[in-house]
Amino acid sequence: MTFSEAVAELPDIVRIWVLWLTVVMFVVPLVLALFRETRMAGYVALAASFVLAVAMNLFYAQVGMVRLLGLPHILVWTPLLIWLAPKLRAPGVRRLPRALLALFCLTILVSLVFDYVDVIRWIAGDRASLIGA
Image (tube, rainbow, N blue to C red; front, side, top):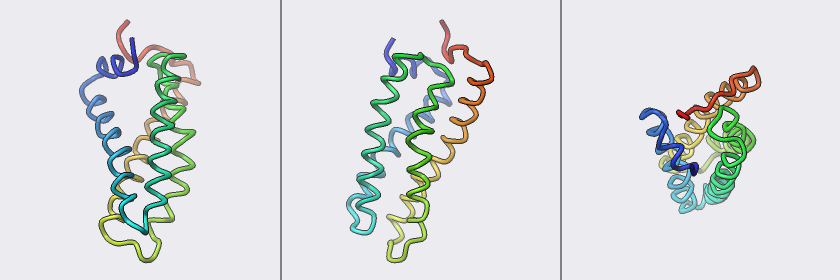
């Protein structure tokens, strides 16, 4: 089963969240790259999104659909969020790119809450597959 096929087996609410993440992680950086003041943030966020997409597929192939799958998010998004957060208050950033940057950061933050909980649960012994066998 591919990663995409496994995601299709998840509950509806999780699939909706994955769709939201996918849209935000690729569309928002592309739009941010259109604005001079957020161009670098857009490029970095887009690069991180591509790295993460590849990492998630490779990691899924190794561990399956388990809670540890949140680890690539933690490793990529935690430093990205730390780098992006100060840019929310940078002077000279227009309203639209600032709002999009905030949306991107908020989405990452929400995902990271779930990811940290999932990885901690995996470390604590919850190693069951997140999809039916």
